[in-house]
Image 1: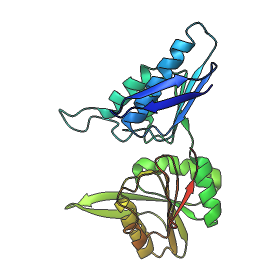
Image 2: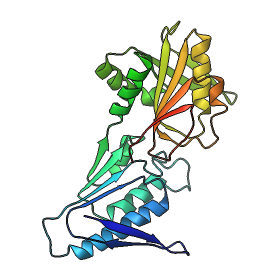
Image 3: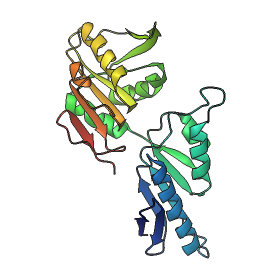
Length: 252
């Protein structure tokens, strides 16, 4: 099934269904404009298939907006992921695929949601570097990174970060002397945490430190990261990056 999207000068987004059939929408999903584009497509498709009870609709979101806002952080603040999930649920897709969601909360809040694994992209990175030690950047990422390490037959070094007087203090639980290390995580906004972690790994003797993130925002560029990280690997789920410091896998 094909469709087209039109954006008006005032910001309105409209959709048109070009032929009938099962619906498959694949979109970054990293903006509210994307969400409204999805809603317009689904509304047009529902109208076109009102008498077709066998047609199905599947949505694939490669970088879910608001996925880090997976709880109400402070009294009086909005629970943003819940707002976004409720909006997606009104569209009533038969399946919603989400690439490497930040936490299971996204899958719990969005009806018919399933996780698209980032493992193939980590595996490509692992093979390109040639058998590095995997590093989980914090306690929250440990379980997922442990599962990946087990599949790859790789060594895993856990790390953890706490703040003391506002400054990050990083502990590394393992021997990295003379080894190549690959930090694996879901998302990089600015990347400063990874910079400090890479510095700590090199202070303990790591030969090289590489970074893999699925959702590569890098809103402040790469100058700071280059101080301690040797290369970045990511997908283009959030945006396309043209930089020799970055190896990017195309998902959309």
